[in-house]
Image (cartoon, rainbow, N blue to C red; front, side):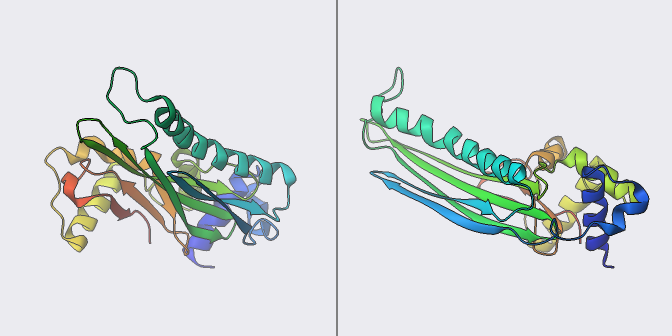
Length: 233
């Protein structure tokens, strides 16, 4: 069994509270890909798309994942709609001209893990001609039993396998330095202060390797945009 498969088996076994001796028995339907449908909304200056899952073995898990994704969408769209309709307090925002957009990618939908990256952007126009732009990439990871996968939850699986925690400070520092060399970007002098940001914004790829997405200006100059740092391989 590949290391990534061993990790997923250990992770799901721990999440499902199975005895260590039974972890190898974690199989379908939890490991099967989820069916995905797309919700697409276009309303004036607001265009957004997001995924919803179907066909999970537990209805409660499916309901939780879909509602959690919907909650994150609402947390961005609803305030933008309010600003668009009423303007911002003590500002010269032009009402009716706020633009917002959401797209998404699904980097992992296999081996019991569902990862989604939500891409948010907005432009807020002011009467003085200034435009404030906002862009963000937010990662969300779920086990198909309806559990949110966190950095803290990952550590026990790696400990069980005798591997280093990819979110430890030493591991993150080594991963970031390797990425900087491979991708050709310069690390900020204070980059170590922001290493722990990885725990709040990471995703799994199609091979269930873990990647951190560092926001602009956290580990590299802001003009480099988001930095994708592989944490495992």
